[in-house]
Length: 178
Image 1 (spheres, helix red, strand yellow):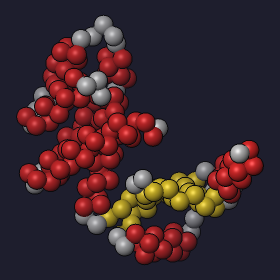
Image 2 (tube, helix red, strand yellow; image 1 turned 135 degrees about the vertical axis):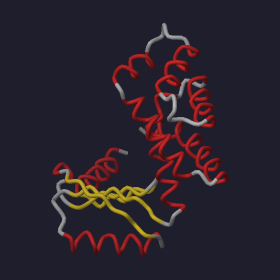
Image 3 (tube, one colour; image 1 turned 60 degrees about the horizontal axis):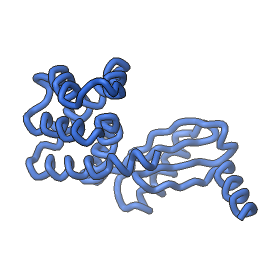
Image 4 (cartoon, helix red, strand yellow; image 1 turned 60 degrees about the vertical axis):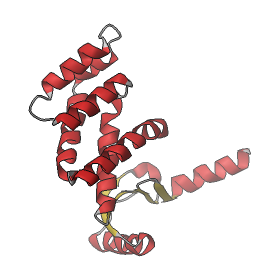
């Protein structure tokens, strides 16, 4: 997973800088969301993975699907991704772009995974603590994963706070096998 993020990050950062300079953050957000949806389609996935489909043909196919949805800069971005064989990481590029956009607006997205459902007061307390720590507004989404055994795991951008029992057990196992 980290490998895909490493590949996607420079593209997301470049698009973000371009969109910010042109005052087109929302437009790029829409285009990237659309491109990511196209890439997610099983038929498009088959085309991307097809070694018999030339890059030029893949580019033509993708751009014909995106006709009217992509401006000239969006089309150039698709061409660049096809040329570098990075079309498959568009979903991650879109996600990273949205993270950069939210950070620019002073809002951080937090993915909170909890072993048990959290009450509103628990979530509110956690969000307040995260806002104090990061000095930005935090927008948290919560999911439940009983495999954590207890505690929570929080992901904010590249930061991971693992306060779960499972995470602590894994850390102990790693320390004991070294």
